[in-house]
Length: 347
Image (spheres, rainbow, N blue to C red):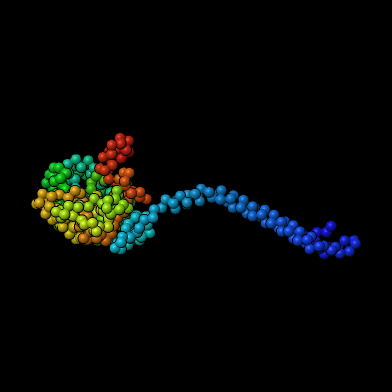
């Protein structure tokens, strides 16, 4: 029997019933469906083969995308929140790099903290504002701790400012802001345009460039970034000059790194030292020591530039997960009871 109704046979045209016509159409549909399915299978196999060739690249891309943190690039009041590898940071570096800026990096070295000074300066030579003019100001009660002098690169210099011996951490906490204000008044104010204050027991481990420059710069505390406001260790005693009310404060800042224009930093140091003196006269000291007074000041005078925890980090279960660690606290890490970790950090 012919497959199609209008085919001719030796006996003449074939006549088919309506049922036969429906069956023929159904059979034709099956044939078309089968052929289309084979074509699709060949297409899928082709794409799979191509995917196998690029599998590692595709996987790397997916992993990178999944690992990229969803981080804010701006504070609620419109100041940049700086992450070193963003496009905005690249723009800030390009903006400042051609201006011939003079920057100071100040650290206080007293007592046993002298053990960190050479490591701090060596790492700063490699990573802190590379290519810029930098003056290191070391405030110390023992200038001999810097002997022999470390070799510095071009456009870099070291100035040692002698301060009276300050035994005990509590006395240092009372005097630190006053010492900073005095040093800025002379000689810093006539020598540099920006000044950054850093704890000496730290190490620069990745580039810290011009993206950090701003009128008033603060750094987010690595253990408190992204946590609820009610977990911030603000001073809550109303009798303290550092007291922060429940409806105040956006972030909690670390005292391990902060800076800005010399004029702004002088105002900050002078104001904080006066608050500390007021509390000292009343036999009060905020629970976070000078960090509490720093946070009180930065609530009243919001920073124009906020650095992410990349710029103040240490190995801790509570520390924020950051894309790049740039400035690491050796002192905090060396407090760890884990012997292996202490060896890893060369404590």
